[in-house]
Image (cartoon, rainbow, N blue to C red; front, side, top):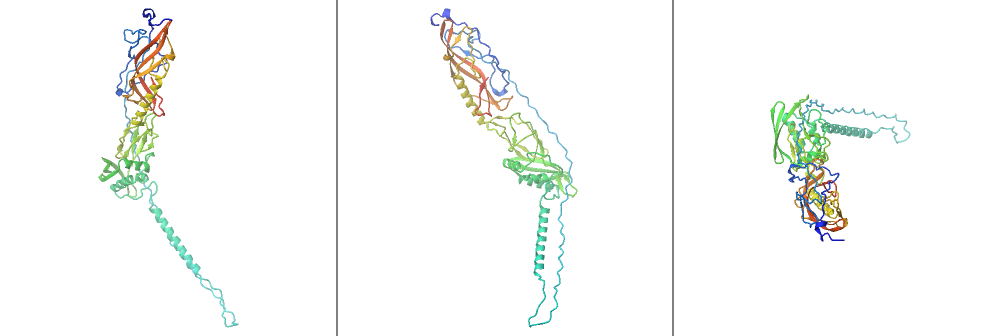
Length: 446
């Protein structure tokens, strides 16, 4: 067998060009700020010997091509406007009063004496006499029971009852002041009781949510002022922010004042695959009622987060409309980069010209036979150093990043009776993808 280097004029390889890959998935659109240009063909710098020839494009026809990329498109934003709901005032229930009946003492029986029998001796015999001790003790016990009953009725009458205001508000300003007192004291039931009419059910109307709200931005410097017959204007502070709101008020049949609304509707467009938690409570719908206060959205995932800034609900006419955008957290970016490095290292160990799920894709000519045992891939440079991953628009639990992978290939090639070692270097444009909710992240190159 003769060496391929003995007679290059007669043993020169004449490949037929790259073999198209089959079943290659289409490149999904990327965000406009990804900063990575698209390329339909990989650029290849030929560093090998006389065994490979480049065509007029400068790409060696013997060893394959990178996958084409699709144009970048941006997802349009949209808004959803909340719908206000009128609520009819509900008449307040009359305050229960306690009544007490005066106890009627029992009649004290008269003592009875038997007639004295004839005297037989100097000792006098007396008939049986009834003792007054039992009557006295019975009266004391009855008095104590009456006192206990009266005290119990007083306690029942003064405690708050669900659905009614704990203390009557005689002025419009007073009912608003009591409402903000309830918010500051994390008392959701007391705040709800100040509304005239039913309050829609909501997972955010709890003591724990109010407590978390006060931790994020406490309410302070509350000042109320009646601005009309049916409205009270409030100025206050939410943490470092100034807030103000108008609270409509109504007067019930007893002459007490109540709030027309104690909550506002918050509209949230939830992502498809990422949970939305507000003050540590996961939402189950895109519409939720909330008290005035500060609220923070989280995901409960360590590698995905929302904007760290809380949103504020200032009053019943706030109507926040939210579209939370999940993003990779610092922990998520670090984990993705580390797993991309590990995936590239595993691809370099493959003994294939077209390893599945790897960035390098090379095909041999129709008359060439590559010896798999001699395939050696070497990564050139560090493509992960400047990697900028983002979450996919199609699945926001999947991180992706465009990168250029430069590799050197060494392989023994046989063409008929001629064989020899081939060495070339290639640049491949590829996209690394992997679900960040999995541990470890399984990265693929597409």
